[in-house]
Each structure stands twice: as C-alpha cells, then as structure tokens.
Image (cartoon, rainbow, N blue to C red):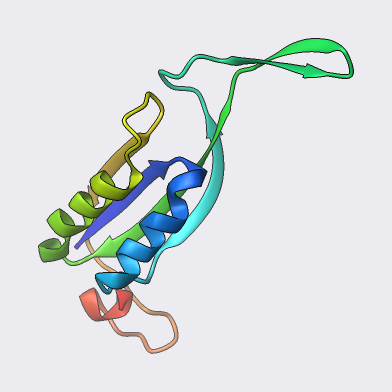
Length: 113
C-alpha cells in the first residue's frame, strides 16, 4: 500500500474529485493548508494599506491505495490538477506498512476500502 499526498489549487478540486470518483477512488481526506513555494507573494490592499501576502491557500488530499492503483491515481492528479502555471502543487508518495480499521479490526488493504 502507498499513501498519496497531493497539494493542489482549491479551484481544481471539483474536477479532481469527480475524476477520482469516476475511477472508484472515493476514500480520501482533504485539508486546507497554506504555504510558500515557487509562487511569488502577492501585494494586497486592505483599507488603503498595502500588505504582502506570503502564503498561498492550497488543499492537501491524502489517501491510501493499493500499489496497483498508484500509477492511475498519479495520472489522474497530473491530468486534472494541472493548470500549467507555477503553483500547481506537488504529489508525494509514501510506503504504508499496515492499515487497521478500528471498528472491525480488519487489517491490510481491506481496511482502507
């Protein structure tokens, strides 16, 4: 099993979610995050005062999938989360030793379905 973390733009989430659902991937967590990367900061204006906005709002998707689903998932993320602009995000892949569903005590890949 692998854990996939994808940092994406909030405005592409609806398309990513629909693509994942169409491919049978419906178990994941979403967190709102803010970070700094290669995107430059923006200057904002609030009540006549200029300020620098250093952090950019992103969404972090986290899911655990079987090894055979990893390549399909990566292709979906690359296809549906990309705008071609700086700041599209990143995908991280981690090995998962074990998964256990607390309610039923099921272990392994069955626990993440």
